[in-house]
Length: 161
Ligand code: FES
Ligand code: FES
Image 1 (spheres, rainbow, N blue to C red):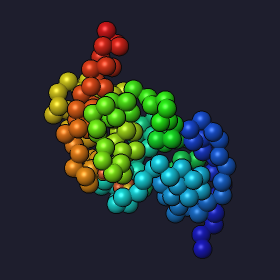
Image 2 (cartoon, rainbow, N blue to C red; image 1 turned 180 degrees about the horizontal axis):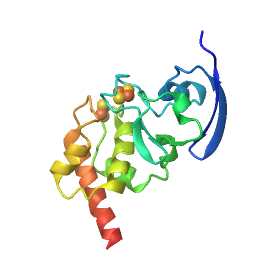
Image 3 (tube, helix red, strand yellow; image 1 turned 90 degrees about the horizontal axis):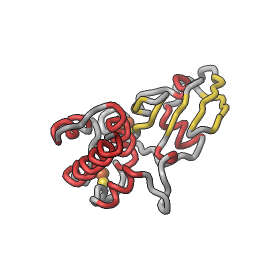
């Protein structure tokens, strides 16, 4: 058995200290140690995007990161987004455009979309599709997700005018 490591990670603004095995995935740390089960695990191979979270402001696949790599870092999960009674603007667009069915892919989609909205112009549907190409929706609800993103981009651009 490998030696355990002490880590300190800020998750959704709250500092957590833990002693973990070096092989522990960040996704498992979030779900099993912190009970933040909004981060979903689909493939565990970096393919589906369900486990996407923010690590120091950039979206990453938490199934491809070790918890020890988040030592000293800031992690944000979907739990930092709005709640049912207080959705954030992107979640509101997902609701308006029925951009989810079973919801399994939704946490990863929301994190990826938020990252895309921060970083890219997303001037065309092709650019949105390209940005979301690493997130798989098993319910194949892509069209409505693109519609929701298009609306979110429009709102972002109007607010920045
Ligand atoms: S569970 Fe991480 S990319 Fe699929
Ligand atoms: S809504 Fe079911 S996997 Fe995307």
